[in-house]
Each structure stands twice: as C-alpha cells, then as structure tokens.
Image 1 (cartoon, one colour):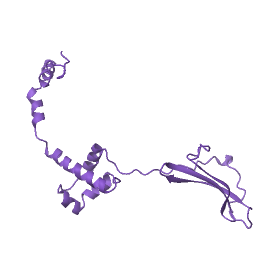
Image 2 (cartoon, one colour; image 1 turned 45 degrees about the vertical axis):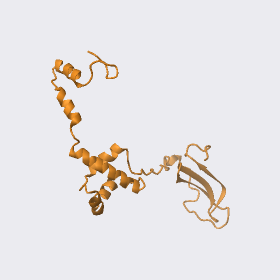
Image 3 (cartoon, rainbow, N blue to C red; image 1 turned 90 degrees about the horizontal axis):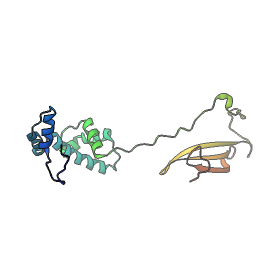
Image 4 (cartoon, rainbow, N blue to C red; image 1 turned 90 degrees about the vertical axis):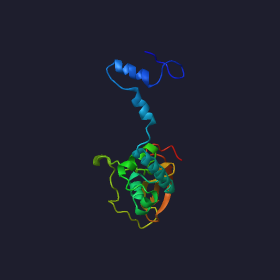
Length: 185
C-alpha cells in the first residue's frame, strides 16, 4: 500500500483509499466522497452560520458576559427574533454554537471557604462569653479575618480591633492566602 500524499506525488485522493477499503470488505464508491465535497451546505449549517453571526453580535454588544441561558432568552425576545428573522432558537442550539465559537458567559468566582472549624475540644476558651462590649478603651480587643475579591483574586485581611472605640489597634495585614502569611501583595 502506498502512503504518498498529493505533495509527494503518486496516487492520492479517494480512489486508492476506496480500493483498499473494498479489498478489506467495505464497499465505498469514490463518487460518494466527491458528492459530499460538491454538495451545497444543508439548511441547518446555513442557519447555524447566520445564528453564529447573530450570537457573536449579541455577545459583543453585551460586554461578552452572557452565557447560553441568557443568550437563549435574548435571541428569543420578540424584537430580536423579528430582527434576525431566524425564528425560535432552541437553548441546546445556542449552547452548541457558543461552544463551537469558544464563547461563554462570565464565570463568577466562588467565595473562598474560610470557616474550617476545629473539633470543640481543640478550640480556645471563650474568655468573654460572647459578650463583645467594653466600657473603657483597651479593655477588650478582638481579632477578625475577612476576604475581599480583587482583580487579581481573593485577598485576606486580618486585623485587631478595640471593641470600645472600634478602631484598628495593633496592625492589619493583607495576604493572598490563609496559609501563606508571608506573601503580602
């Protein structure tokens, strides 16, 4: 069997392939491959091309944030449907075409999991009995940690607050992760 390609010269195209398949017991006429190449695009592929253009336009006009669910709703609005003239568009069609175009909606970042409770016997004692009030400055300090979403991801902020004045007392610290206290932004 020859493994030549059209650039190397020799027999190439569907005829030698069909001959090998026929000798193996699979009968395929070479005319079927020619017919497939010369056949005009189907109605579905023509509609898909029109829908891809419309999906791309709507996606761009909405700052590239719409996912398939909202894109489906947008394309089937009466004013949009009349404008593009392609009729009702199924949600699975929108999903398939957006996937083929490499488009997706904006993905929301999940909140980080910050509460990792230790077993009760390993927790420190509650020295104020959940009574967070003070009558004088510097009588009770509490520490807190919170997280803030930024353009570069989640950052964690830790601080110590005086309960009486509600001011940050000692220091505050911003880090990229709870386990890396030395990597500040």
